Length: 388
Image 1 (cartoon, rainbow, N blue to C red):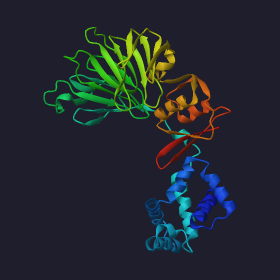
Image 2: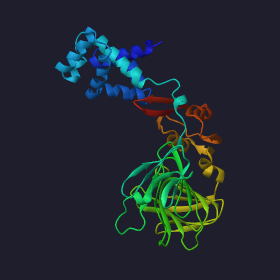
Image 3: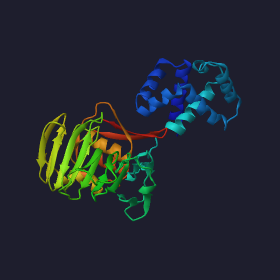
């Protein structure tokens, strides 16, 4: 059953010890170029520290004569010449096979083993203390103390060292890939963070002319109404300069401002917001409208509300969504790197899929005649290979 795998291991050894034939080299090159994981595996074998570390694992369970020769060779010869040492090719092939089989060989059900995202986040205090939030809870309330939405305590804020002379401290709430969480701010505003997102906000809005927070990524807001203290969401550029501001009094809206997306999209569900590009222009949105900010330009269009807010309700909703945009969403939620091989058509997809689906279920739905998917897992890294 593993004849092919062992044959590839023999080809790898032959190439490294210089005995490979032209036809064998063509076979091996085709295999190396077939996937990112194959290439990664081959490149690792030429790393001396990596090879020695892996060899030690196999030495502990195999003490035969040829293995001792390999060990002696590693001690006596430069690493680049160990592959040319006589009498140890069989042992080297076995080591290569073992490294590949246990660390790199793709699992046939790799996608089945990749679960969807779940609740999870951190809060970073002003003093740098990072608090990992309970994934079994649904949200956190910022008040006199930090508490979960079920009333249990996260951290008494009076236990946190304050900056001298500072009335309000800045907190940063963040989700990683494959995480989502809800936060209720000190003014009663509710914020839902999508995966790979963060907000920075004060622990108290008292004595401030406006309630300002900074957003990276995507969040849904239900703003507590206070006509005397506007609520402002600032989206920033990669260099941390201000890009877009959204000012509201009390309303429900969604902002998608991921750094790897071309646009910032602000979608209004109810109420009224003013979207402005720092130092340039602004637009006032009505419910059902979406502002699109791109490269210093601002435009307004009719929004697909269900698509814009589907993530908050636990769904992926695609409406003629292009493949690469869709893959970026999958990458964040399933915490997996997406790699394109070959000339992949940028197909468009429409449909609704639960965010609780496994990656395998998601890919089964997305498969078309033009696009194929393969999941590889190696060295703790997960890759989704997209091919034509």
